[in-house]
Image 1 (cartoon, helix red, strand yellow):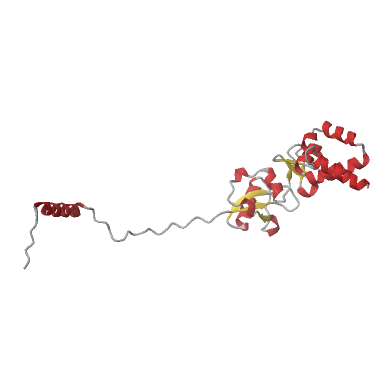
Image 2 (image 1 turned 30 degrees about the vertical axis):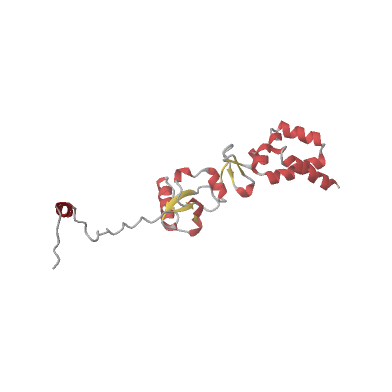
Length: 203
C-alpha cells in the first residue's frame, strides 16, 4: 500500500474549500417563472360621423361597434338623438393606429382622404375640392396663393406656369411670380422646366 502524505498547506487548503462550500448560498435548481400578464388588446383607430356631413370624430376602440357607441354617447350628451349602428358611419384608419390622439392634426385628416375645415377661412374643404396641406396647414382652394401652390403642388403649378407663358411675355410672368412672392420657390427648378415646355407647346 502506498502511503499518502498530506502537507500542512494541503490540509489548510482543503479546510478553506469546505468552509466556502458551507457558506455559499443554496441556489435552487429551477426558479419558478410567473405566468405572463396578458397584454391589453391594442386599440384601433376609427373615425365616426354622419355620411356627407362634417361631424366626424376620431376614436380609439377595439371594434367599430365600440367606436360607434362612444360617438353615440357624445351625440346624446350634446342633445342629439343617436342613430342605430350603421357601418357607413364608421371608417377604419389604420394609419393612425398607435398614435397619441392629441397628435392627430388637421393635415392628418387630409392625408387619409378625409375632409376638414380650412385653417384660414374656416370653410369646409376636402382633397377632392382642391385643398392642399401647405407647411402643415390645411388650405382650401379659395384661400391658396400662387406661392402655396408652387410649394405644395409643384406639378400642377408647372402646368399653370406653362399656360401663362403661352399667353404672356416671359418678363410679365416673371414679374407676376415676384409680385406673388414665389419667384424664389420656382426659379431653381420649375421655371426652367416651364420655359422648356412652353417652347415645345409653341413649336
